[in-house]
Image (cartoon, rainbow, N blue to C red; front, side):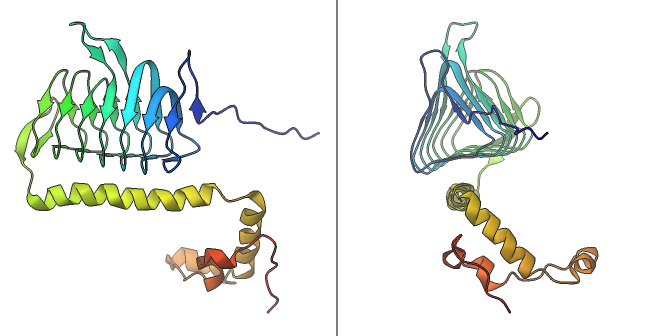
Length: 238
């Protein structure tokens, strides 16, 4: 006897009396968890495996911001000094893979590197950059235009004009890439199955040999153009 496996995962989940508010033009990956008092703005993207847990306080993500895969964003009611600690992330911010943001503020067009940890009360000003793997201690303020890194994080140098431009471009690139992922995740089952038929039809007979050599062959036009991949069409016989 076969049993269907039903996932209990809920991408958007209420907690207490709080519900996430996600803009219709934002992308939240199906394996992400956005919980409670969380606001996600227009064109922002929450990638695979991320957790945004707004249970005891609120999380705000502006527009055009990307929170990359496996990152964790959380909050606290207050710290030892009694300061209220939501997490506020501005517009066009890039948060790299596996970062941890806890009760902090990241202003517009800032950059948080992969694996960085921002503790409670941290403020990252506009156009500031946190290097990959950095640990930013409680109540630290990172001034605009500076790069901080290390454990504990310290001032390293000033950002160049090219790096500031890169931060803005990074946000744009992720916003565009999110649209591709959103479209793929929105495909109905029939369309996905039809694409499998096409891939089988156009598979190379020497595919295993190609794989051994590391050869990557171009996909046929039928797989590149979404308008030609429709679930109500069968592949034409050669």
